[in-house]
Image 1 (cartoon, helix red, strand yellow):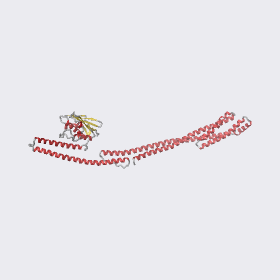
Image 2 (cartoon, rainbow, N blue to C red; image 1 turned 180 degrees about the horizontal axis):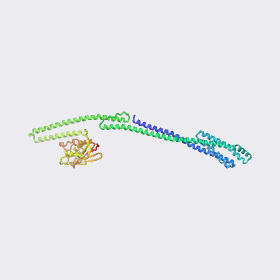
Image 3 (cartoon, rainbow, N blue to C red; image 1 turned 120 degrees about the vertical axis):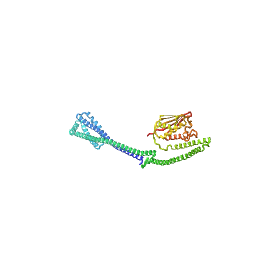
Length: 485
């Protein structure tokens, strides 16, 4: 399965959990809102019920006060109740959400109308009895047949009982809804917490799984690349068929091709080594033969050789020696970078001292300072310093100075002499093989030494430059990398 598919599946799982969380939270929120709305409406219903009950009670008190005192001022609350109670009952009916509660409001409204009819008849008879004796008899009749027999009280008791039942039921439902609301809130919090934990765990697990999987794949590819860089051309058997498979296949292909190319190159190098050996032997053999012939001529015909002929014969060994030096230098130049040399700790001061004993004449003054101890190939550094010191001896005037300056990643060496100097136009030319500033017939100079120096330094990823002028003095400044053990 491709990595993009696995990542997409992980995202889909996380999104699915988030959608489930949102869905359950939405459903629970609706339930919480519904319970909250019911409690709000229930509070309105109870408040309206209390107001209606109070108005009815005020009407009853006003009615009794008027009958006892015949004072019309007592009827103010009665008439006020007649105007407001119908609207209060209507509002209470609209606010009530339970069908059973609405039936109770209907019963209260019916009983209240019956009581109002009863009260109106008595109030009307009472008013007329104050001015008419015949009406007084009607009032006394109503008083005896209805009021004393507690007809109005019966209405009032029924209304009070219904109000009491109404309130008790409403409070019970409110308490039940409040408990439900509390449970819904806790359930919402619990579900949100569980879904959040699940999302965190699944997202983290998916991320860790993918990171570990990708890291292992990349590590295998890095190991393959490191093996290739070390010359171990191994392969990765990758059957995952994902985005990294193409990279793995490319590295495997590169490893195979490099292995084949290295094998071919090694074969060519072996052939070149054999060729160089044969060429060296075949080129030196005639030179040695010529030298032997010259020696035989001098031994057998020494008395017959004229002075002019002897000068010519003396030139031939010098040319043979130069040719042998050229062959040796060429072979040494060709071998640079092909042999794997062991690294070791090199005390450069001691190395320069050993070279001076072999190369520098006694009359020369050699000064060296600040030379480090470093971990590198002794033979390569010895070749570089040996050639530069030899060059300073050839072209100098008796004084050589060698110093070093430590940088962050390399050492900067300076080999200076007090010779006649090198014109600037030759600063690059002297590093080209077989190029020399001396005459071609000079047996001491083959034009190979500085070419060898430059090639070794470039193999070590260093640089070399010349600081000189015709006025006198030449400095060869080169860098040599620091290397860990």
